[in-house]
Length: 223
Image 1: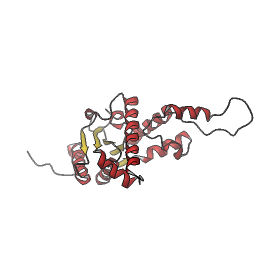
Image 2: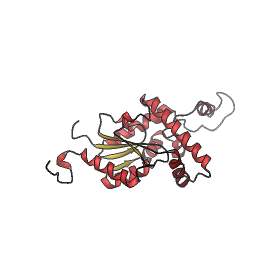
Image 3: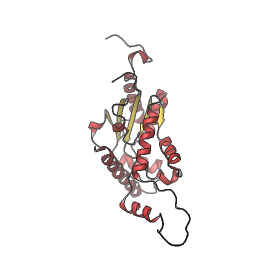
Image 4: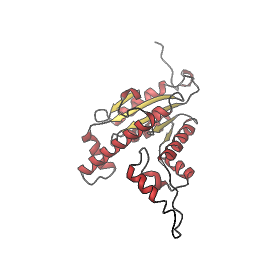
């Protein structure tokens, strides 16, 4: 792979596994851009909608009923005047816009990209380090309850199951791959067993090894 290609760390993660937190910490330590929320923000601007309109659709596909409601939101073909409906954004439009933005943002230099199937999208376009974060259910329930203020354990479990189902469908539909398949990643980390700080150290160390030798900020010891 050409040395000129930027180093990109992609983060795929289960809800409650700490992947987004660790990814942000890794980006800070390496001085890399952290690409997450700005994808949604810029996509909303380009599509002409409020960020809140598409926020709940990030990394997921609309259900049949959501699509049906969207059709009715356009209003009847005839009848009395009604105010113009809000801009309708399809799954295909949203995902295509987000993918183009990811490609544009990652061309600017080293970065950490959260989700969006970046492990597949950026194949052959960067010096990739693809990471998958997972953890046992009980660990994830504790994290979701604390971070997202889930009112009860059963609600946290429902949030986790819904997130897993949606992300798996999203990846399968637009990459043809299985989200859980470890062959998609260079490293899978169980944060229920490996502390966040240790995972962070490991990823930083591996990312530095992807730099061309002349660009590494440390002196290599002779073998």
